[in-house]
Length: 108
Length: 111
Image (cartoon, rainbow over all chains, first blue to last red; front, side, top):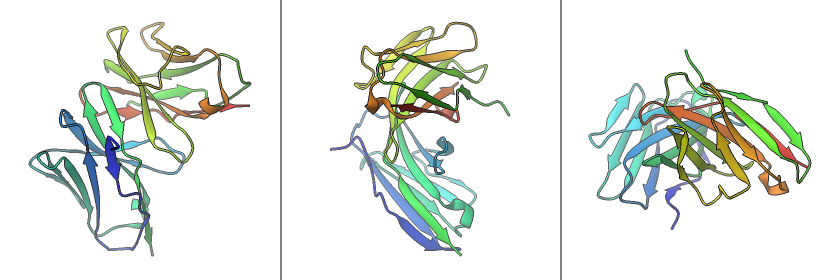
């Protein structure tokens, strides 16, 4: 089983749509959780950390379920500029493990 | 806003040659990392570095790789004898707590 698994997509949605990404991780000792976005041929950029209580940043909501080892990201009212690959990242000590990413394309 | 910088942006080398990739982490950060991303594949952890020594390394980080912090600002990744399969983007990252900030990457092409 892969350490961090994501639905690869691609997700093609119209502007204004709501889209949800899921991620599961295999190591129960994982400590911290993040969503990064990566534009084509660019470096990953931190989108948000994910907390057990769930957290929201504008149009983005992240959830963590430690019992199920499951992380989610919800994007509301999607914009053209949200088109990117979204990376689920799990941290164990100083070792960050990345999912393969979910590709999102938002269309006019 | 402080940022991680990397040089060069693109390095072309012949198989068997040594390469050194350079990074300048954010100045008050204490933890430093190297990752690689083969074209079309996921980001892979190579090594983390803290207090002038390696704290974690992955199965990819074998004897042909080494890291160094030669002075107070630079953090380098050396690949001793490059192979074709070392062709990838190499990202440096640093952090103070848990959230890591990535440099723009060095594209390494081994011919």
